[in-house]
Image (cartoon, rainbow, N blue to C red; front, side, top):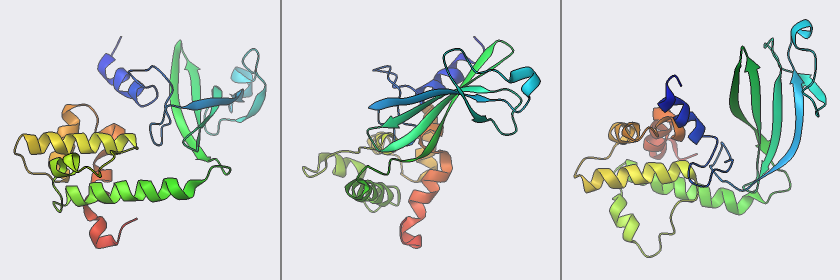
Length: 201
């Protein structure tokens, strides 16, 4: 297999590597339900105008000659997303797309908790709090968002190694673990470190 390490890294963004379950690409939650399976046709009807067996055709893949099998899922986290499986010359390419929020889900408490956790990360990466102090605080209940967990773990490792904590050192630590892309890249760390000036998000 070519570039096996890269393939496994991207697979970790779709499937929980421990429990082998599909995870939400938005937050990493792994309680999900299949809602619908169908074929989205390619834009080139002569070469790709037939639905996969056992499915119906719904819509067209814009700017793509080849169609794809779509698995539509709803996470118990409240996020809606799709898996797209597209075949080309013997390869099957898989990627996930977040399509929105479940309108029936009560987002108020979830949003408040996520904002609280994000603010806590922001204070640590700015140097206002030390991660290991947060870790031993009896009131600390951990992080529920997967990428927040990874960033926090990286900051704890840096402090244990007596290294400074900022967006660059955290990015380097995450790169060592092949996790930088999974948390949204350096741009996410830049957002965290600048939120005090911007008044938060």
